[in-house]
Length: 409
Image (cartoon, rainbow, N blue to C red; front, top):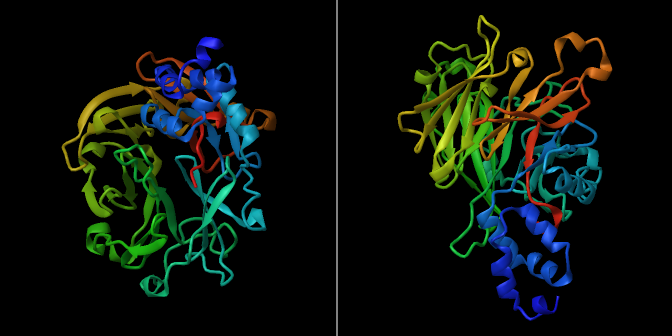
């Protein structure tokens, strides 16, 4: 200990930053006071975040009472995941009451985006909050100015029923990160608000730095939809390297939003979908690859042999010609249970499987299980499990242990 005390904090930091993983840093931090002081300093934690991608710690399910389901042993993330579950408030009781009125809409970089019905009862112009369940901080966003809101006319319902209940929403809102500057300081985040109206798509952006809303310019209606009478309807939202992607219903096109430029565009992806039955928008998933490349996974589900086949494509710029990288047939017993990919990390896919069909009559066995699937070794392992017959929406939660986390709001 005497030799350690003789070292400056900068030297200790240069030694600790060479540890191979955040889990090793967390253990070092717990060993003694001097190491804990260095590891928990904001300056050091920003260096850690610039070198290490946050690992998956569990799955967050908005509709479940527990909310967060930590990774299970023997997964190495089980211990920090359990620490997160104990330290964070995933019930969001720190938001303005009543807490049960808030609906989780998105999660990114440790932040959660929630909204609740406004007093006027609008399902489009809701009250919006961005919060950090670990630090219990929240930011209530100002209402969209009337001058912008006037462009929204009878938006289509995006979720919930037609009864205008607490779960009904006619907007699409989500978080967009802006990355870090040259000094490693995190840039202001953005909240994107979208509404699909008859004949047009309306979009606004809120910047956490300026605390102001501004209008975005989506593509014209004719580029979005082949059928004017159907208006504009969007499928599941995907993300990679600062770009968001939606399948446009009744087409084989993507709506793309590049948040680095805050620009929309349309991409025809019909060539890679030829010969495949695409009944659900979650059959396409985008993942971040090295060197800024994006990997697109197309799930071919409705096959005569009842197997699930994944096709992997890659591109640097979404307007490039896609390159077919690989084709993987999933285990035979997954054919009827596969319900999509919720994320990826270091060469592993995180896959949702429903309970086996033969156990539908037994409520004890009606679990939804999330597995990791190593693309190189083809090994499979259980990540976490949810005791529920159905899970409509789930987020792969990536983050650092509480001891290595900075407030995100």
